[in-house]
Amino acid sequence: MLSRLRVHLVILSVVSVLGAWAVWGPQRAAGAALWNPYDAVAEIKLPSSVQYPNLHAVEEYRGYVYVLDYSGVLFTYDTRDLPGRSEFKTYSAPIASLEASADHMLLRNGQWLYACGQDGLAVLDLSNPARPRLHVPGDGEDSYRNMFQSGDRLAVGGADTVAIYSLADPSRPVLLGGYSLTSGSVFAVAIHGDLMYWSQYTSGVSGGTLHALDISDPSHPSLVWSLMVPDLPYHMRILDGRLLCANNSSVALWSLANPRQPQVLDSQAASGRACALDEGNIVTSGRVHRVNGDVLELVLRYTTGGTQGDGIPHGSTVGSGYVFQAQTQRVLVLKGVAAPEAWPYQLRLPIVRNR
Image 1 (cartoon, rainbow, N blue to C red):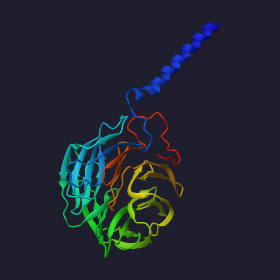
Image 2: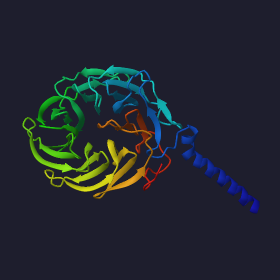
Image 3: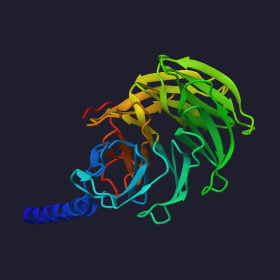
Image 4: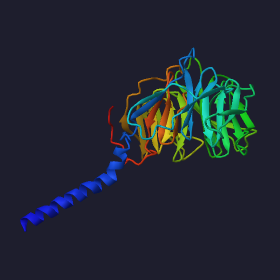
């Protein structure tokens, strides 16, 4: 009887092991890396032939990554092999490049890639994601630095103006109106309802200024609120009906209960020259926060291995389960929480973990 029981126990053990392998084994057998959220999995560098390899923005579409350098050249990289990789990889050989008629920021809207810079707003066609095509060149009328899309409206800001475009036809944005600055330049923009928020940098002035613009009639926008702040916002996002400001050295959460007079709820140390929202997580340079009630919680610190050092906003993005963080010398690729392969553990970030 005892020997039979032992046989049954052995059989059950073997079945259990095989069953466990059926659940966990395929990922490991296929070589899929069990990366933690926000582990650095890759980097993207401009080719060595570029004389001044400074990049400003990055976007992603269907496994292809688009990197914009400061001279206005858009480089395309094939990163479709990222899912399942078990080792850090450097991508340094673009598969295509073209003059993008822009040199500051990128923002993707479906198959259309908006690029802004000293020549205004340009549109690139990504219908063939491996070979972007310039669809609408910049008009050279205004110099833009940052963009924000809300539905069928696009806000842009730059050297001395903020502007509102209609995206009724996303392939050809139409200028609806703008607001000119008497001094300084615009670093960040956001739209919430019929209001546009924007941050102003003025040379010689510490910190910056936040503004709210009524754009209910975009052809005649009107300034309704302004406030000096100690830390200049480089990027703005709308998160659950609140305004998130990614600043030079902090992130700040603002209540929009009274949208014409925002009130700051919380502020935490961070380097916000690059900022991306990944499933509600606020990914800045070296830190990840998330909102808990009216408080910004620090949930993770990570090593960036690079900087956003040239004093302008750097355009980062989230796509295909990865966070692409633009740095001055490279793009750092982090594992996001919406991974393309199934991860064999619960995707919940630990509280304040250092790497």
